[in-house]
Image: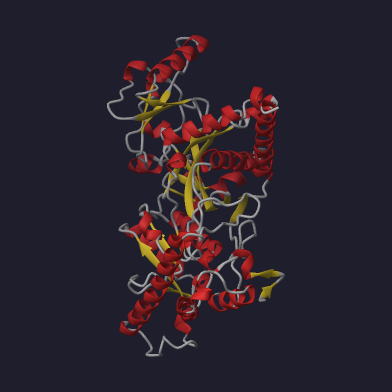
Length: 531
């Protein structure tokens, strides 16, 4: 049996079928992250045959592609010792030039110099595919579980404003103090989004909420709301209103209570664009990038009613502020930040340093951010199936109020990778390089894979997972060149500027305790009913 560092390949791949994504059941155990395989039926055996045949076909296409390549060195790639069989290839699937550019630049870095661009993608034997659009289900057919794709399917519950709001409300209801026996402080930790309604079907609830605030705070209070079209991004269609008569919903919208007492820096309102890399759902594994962008309004903040229409003050989205960059003067944080600022943005690391200097506990702010991110992932992640090939960067937008409470504004899929300044290049370029290095799809020997597939296809006794563990270990060792892939929960070899937030962070551990408590209480209630 081939064992590396006390581990064996069969821990990750108990049967040969486990290397194929088609056979991974869309649920993994929370403790081990191990998947199970369904292969008892005749259909299962036919599906395995199809997977094996597909890999043999893809290898033949891979060989043909390399032979036809202009820069091919004429080495016979079909031979076992050909170094081409173990090269790591990346594929970019995007029509957006800014995406293609930043991904290619990342792979040209010395840290990732061992990678090669996929020649035409027809063989489907790449190691990593970076895609901008949402992949089709067919894009995942017959992939190997260690081939990585930069998108998850089925994440609308996290990235659509109306569904995110519903998931968080449902999550908070499950863990409400009366139901879960939590103290008020613990219960408040689930209150992470401003009051939010999805219109038109929650219009009556919105009117009730609006009226209650008006009565509670007085007619002259700042009863401001921000309107956001559902399913749109980059600031399109956003507006701030104070009068209920201004609320129009000819199309589905989310209307959210405006944070009218934002925490200001040098008199300017700002939010934070943070990047969270998720490498697994069901169970959750996630990392937060320690650098990001603080996005400011281009004019100093005012809560006066007459300023409400001034997007320069109230809307911090970079796409909106871009047209006002010429209005920025020498008092603006982006100007004062020098090389750490550009347009209306500054690096979060620079902002943290300035806040430390005025006595703000930024370690505490960071922990609050992590807690918000983990809660959002847990609230929405329960509806997202395990997808062994997938990883994804999400853009989390958060804001602090004057009491330094952290509020989640929204979560973005495919956050903008546009680089309009050296600051963008530094932050986003480093983000992509560190993401690729952390995900680190393993090297695999394509020729060894073909040889094993051919043997298992012709020797039917071993084609249906009937081989001994020793044979399985030997096959997997040859395919993986002796290197056992990382499993769920293990710390990646290179994390760069990322910090793991799930599992293992204090915020995630606290959440797990509550989840286990709730599960235990539900179990006890069911047991009492059956007595």
